[in-house]
Image 1 (spheres, rainbow, N blue to C red):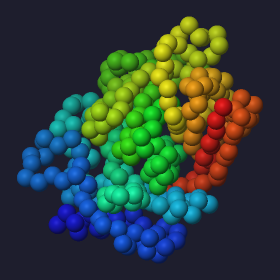
Image 2: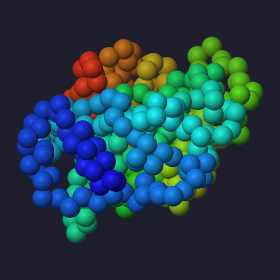
Image 3: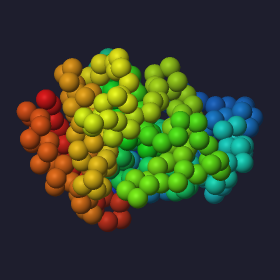
Length: 336
């Protein structure tokens, strides 16, 4: 039954993690209930946006390693269908021809019990990745986004009831996770506002890869997770916030409590534009929280240097995501 399936998935979440016994003991007294998002019975599969829990099983693990004794050992499970069909196959949200060229992915993040609330089990997020010609580097999920999402899932007080702006949202895994944890989220990307998968491809310039369908895909993933009441998507091009491009900025930007992002810096060319954008949106007192892989990130040393020069408080913390290999990450907290 549904209870047995959920209980089995909870056990999988903790399997192979460091300090496994300690984690299991800390959860033993929690009351487990089935997430209402997946309570689907006697309903035509063609009317569903995402797979019900009974159609999902474990595909692989992503385990979080950190000096933080609360968070370390928490695992994310990437799910697949038990019938071996692609995620989204036969569902209401997977009937468009453009979806045939895309890839659906589903992640179950370990969560913790909230005060005065029943423990609701893992947090499920479904996203669609899009082909490189339409999404460029942001069209697929990067490891730092999974690590950051798991970190936030174990520290929900960072985002609950906060207004959050995510820069460089990509496919929206982190932003949707934050929304489901109680944050009011604005996800942002650049490129064409109305582009579609299999539509016109934007010709990129010499230094920048311009996506043609990233913003449209972000809205698709918001709809897929039924988070429209708690999320919005907007166009933000970091280069518009450079001093010489100030006329391109939108006036009346709203106040945010937290600015987040994952794997935002690959090259040194983007550093000044990102620093300028962060300063603009953090000028009213917001806190910054970024996550990045540390391997093959040529722009990271310069970015950290410029953060120290432009912001009053900068703290970094090493962590790792274990997924077959060990992937070193850096968590960056900063404020003006």
